[in-house]
Length: 258
Length: 368
Image 1: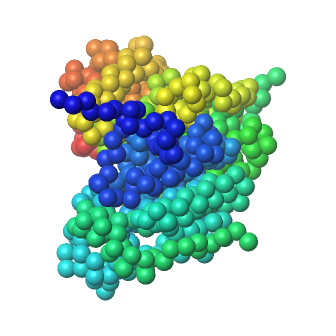
Image 2: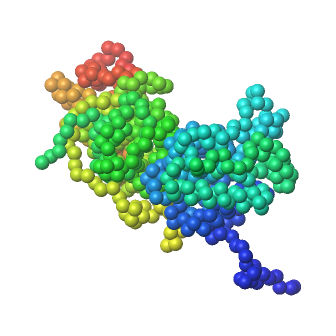
Image 3: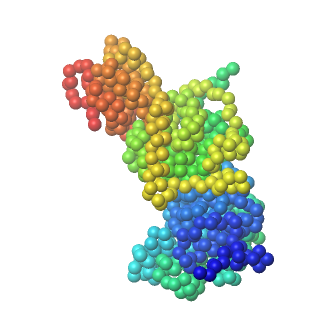
């Protein structure tokens, strides 16, 4: 049987142009193949590594698909109750104003059960950074309707499509928090193409840099696919996201420092 | 020279927390305990000790702010009254699951629902038996004076960090609102970051190269591991039951009859003991100071000595269940309670004791 080259034999040091950040652990990601969470994790951890913030960072994981984010992020983390990550982060930041504190939340966590905490953490202008992954569905619990589910979109709890007359409208919470004087930088990005990944990383860098200025809350939404929940292939889901999600949740900076 | 002041119970526990080296208070206003946060703001604690106080948007947010601070190894607290404590049950359960130390205060008012703002003891079950989901207990301290409101802040933090557990001071509207003299002690310094790292190596203080990352979570999807986590929690509660029981015996040595009461009810029964002795009745009072761990062994001992026990509570009969479990049928145990914010009078409870155990019964007393 022929020799199977090891990773180290294949990747000669002189050929190595990119490697995984050391702030991601060796644990295999538990996310579905094709999902954007892995890229979002990687970008945030890359920026924290590049800014040399590992020892100063305390992250807060939510309830939802990223409930186990602390399995993948090699930093000190707290796991919050559903929707309460902004309150938990407030407690940390008020007692550790010198630390870099962030939450990583999904749409159900941030825009449904945690709406009160989200609005008030933004309104107080807590000097934390909120990363908000919006895929328009409850992924972890099996594809139920989220506050951000689009009109007509089929989910486990809107099997005939979201009827806005009886189920309410998709909530543009990012535009909402941008209205509050407590937010300093609000941006919406995606991670489904290399170009978008680069833009998203820039927004994440700003959101982390700005926290040091103590000017208020930085909020980065990442519109992402949920190929499992949407019952599509990864490529189909990315196409569907471009055609349906982006018109409702347009990408770009929503609020930038003056 | 002693530093003695006239204070409300709510102010006393706030001052006690400051002097115990508390790092942060997160709360939401609710009667009859709003003076706790008001006192902290009025006393400019940021300048005094560097302590943080923040008015949150809800009791839910308050308790999760406490979670965040406690997970950093800080001495943090919140306070509320019954309806607000109900809202906090989620966070308390999460803190139980993550074994985070904190100080909590419930200045109990009558319920259910909005109920009343008058004092009550109807949150005993919620507090002592685990108000949130899952198998857990808190250490519960029951102050019966303004001095104890003050003292239990420091004691509460000590116990919380000694056992990595939540400590609830279960007070009531009377103890919170009444004024008495309080003897204050020296300021305990707030912990430095280095001290926190040394004494709470589990705390999220930022991952440094010398250690693995710290994770505060109550989640483990593996049921085998989750059972072990639960078994270890139960071991801790058992250890606390064996080592941290506190109670006060008042005229118990020669007692033939016994009041069992905590908090405001204990103050009332203390007076009833004096009245009873004037009437020639050898009556004593066992006042549990810790409601968990409960002084079951002491009650079991007293059950061999007395002819009857009357559990007096401002509830429909909650603690009486623990009294009955403690004596296990060895002696008759009755309950007397007033509800909805009414406090019983000393002669009222003494009459009930007499009618239950001494006189011929002329009417059916309140029993549960």
